Image 1: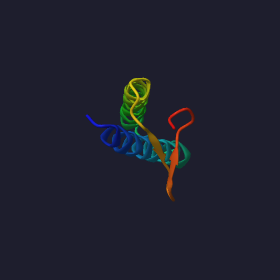
Image 2 (image 1 turned 120 degrees about the vertical axis):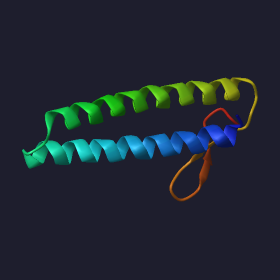
Image 3 (image 1 turned 60 degrees about the vertical axis):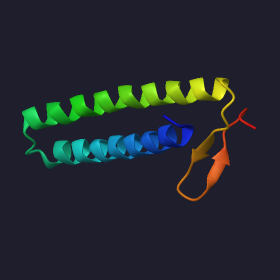
Image 4 (image 1 turned 45 degrees about the vertical axis):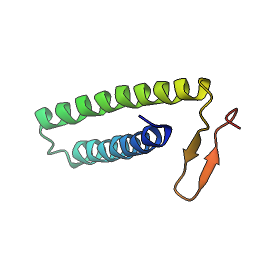
Length: 84
């Protein structure tokens, strides 16, 4: 897996995690939320958090090996501290 692949995957996971957070809040606020559905969403969010942590660890291993990394923002690419 290349550094670009890791960064792309990390961004996708972060978006999905944020979307799940919004869905969970909406379900709770509606007051009509199915508790089983709510539990499933929360479990999926926790799995995403773990996968994000794994991707960050992988990214950091690449950085220690001397790969040049860039943090992808919504507008432009910014070098990570210590990667230049």
